[in-house]
Image (cartoon, rainbow, N blue to C red; front, side, top):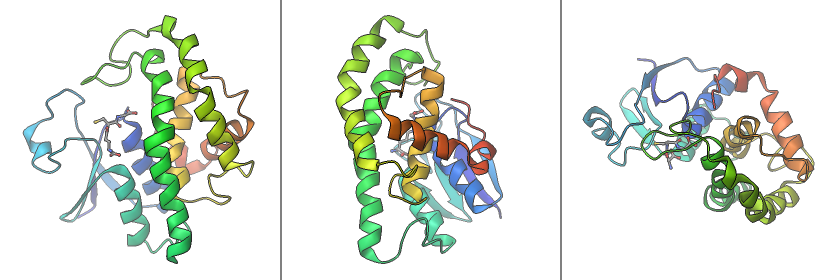
Length: 208
Ligand SMILES: N[C@@H](CCC(=O)N[C@@H](CS)C(=O)NCC(=O)O)C(=O)O
């Protein structure tokens, strides 16, 4: 059986996995999970937390987008994307955790008003709240500056293409939809340009 991805076109977490699958050149089927809450029982039976995405690899069920990226790199023996020596692997893991815990929430603070995020409906679920945007930029700027300094100017999170970049790409893509100006963050702008130019990113059908 082909890989089955429980997906939603506007989920940034699902887009990470579609990008990874396209990089790996793996064919897969998609089953769309509605954003509405509560999630359907057929989905929570598979993923009790209900977050989108989940991957079913012939009965091996993996949830949580970063766990899925690690799983796929291991499945395809792609040590270039997720290194095997534990020292180099730790560097990727540290980045993934920092991105999820510190940096992604900063971007989200801008996305939410810019794209009218509504819990249970997702981005574009409501009207944009444009009056909130100027204040948010100043609040998140120090965190974005920290990330800009951390990644440097290579065009990759860690100097070469890894799953850390796969995880970040949907969030960088989303800045093209929110209009978040990266002019003050040249390394982030270059990183975005490098990742979004990869053919696999376009093949992953980014929507928002
Ligand atoms: N920690 C989970 C979070 C899953 C999650 O929140 N998924 C949807 C909503 S169910 C999503 O991508 N929301 C955020 C977005 O669209 O940026 C993961 O990484 O897979």
